[in-house]
Image 1 (cartoon, rainbow, N blue to C red):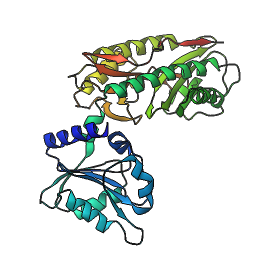
Image 2 (cartoon, rainbow, N blue to C red):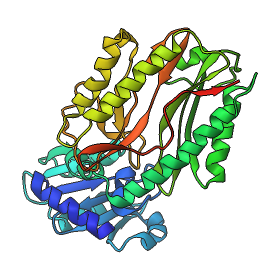
Image 3 (spheres, one colour):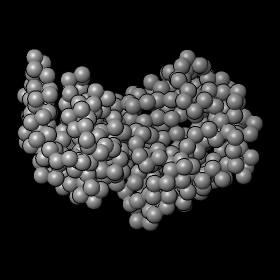
Image 4 (cartoon, rainbow, N blue to C red):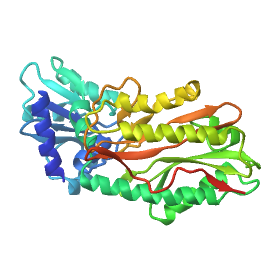
Amino acid sequence: MFEERMKRLRERMAATGTDLVVVGPSSHLVWLACMSPHGDERPVLLIVSKDHAGFLMPALNADSQRPFTRLPFYTWADADGPDAALASLLADSGASKPGLAIALDETMRADFALLVIDALPDAKRGFLTDTVGYLRARKDEAEYSLLKMNAVLNDGAMRAGFAALKPGVTELEVAQAIRDHYIANGAKPEFTSVCFGENGAFPHHHTGERRLKANEAVLIDIGGRKDGYPSDMTRVGIFGETPEGFDEVHAVLERAVQAAIEAARPGVPAKAVDKAARDVIAQAGYGDYFLHRTGHGLGIDIHEPPYITGSTETVLEEGNVFSIEPGIYLPGRFGVRLEEIVILRGNRAEVLSELPRTAFRAG
């Protein structure tokens, strides 16, 4: 996998005129090299040029990381600092010519980036968006299989959450039932947002001690991780009698999700998918209550490109994976959000979850 991804990276570097790619201890490095070296204030960098690649590596971590790669290590000790080792790595990477175009990992520590910038003050600098980021956004079949597996596992976790609803249960207790399902199925809980009643009107509500009452809406947004990849999904339900206006809002959002899924195809700008969902909600009179973008990419990171916003010009491509999650949030009453993760395959958006978007009913 590493060799194939390095080959694709160098092809992309040539296509974009990038001379040097600099990757920190981040999800970019996990994707490219399947490595996650210990990250602290000691600089760790993978530097890739057209004909060389190597790691700037703290000496005290070298032995633990050696089993994971055959690339050369340019080690440095605390007593000496990283400058000489970095200079040697850059020289071997052919970084001596003027006017280099370098792409820096936008997620790594600023002081790591400044080490490279100070060493190459005349270089033209950018981020990994058009190189590693571009490649990560186009999932291969192995990644599709892992994301699909996690989505189906997440379906079960969602069912476990709604099955835990009973009079007086707290949001935290329902969240624990969801976490227990992940753990029992070999996954790691990533986040569990359980929102009772009026708490559903906060898109980023922090699950707490709020107790469930009769005749109120419940919103659950959850994700777990297994074998390196995550899941993400939102569903809603009712405990007892349906609150006034809930069914209408749910129906509007179902139409918005369907419109966005239909709009999501290779060759379409991401903003067109956002517009498809937003137009449905605005036409129903709820435009002021849709408070966020329609979606975000999903891969090793739960939030990564492409972002599905009203201003994103990115043209969607085969293999892109992202959420479609329009929401309507009515302060003091309830919130409804329906979230799917889709992958662009062929000329359509395939939904990864197998769980219906109909509202759960309990109590």
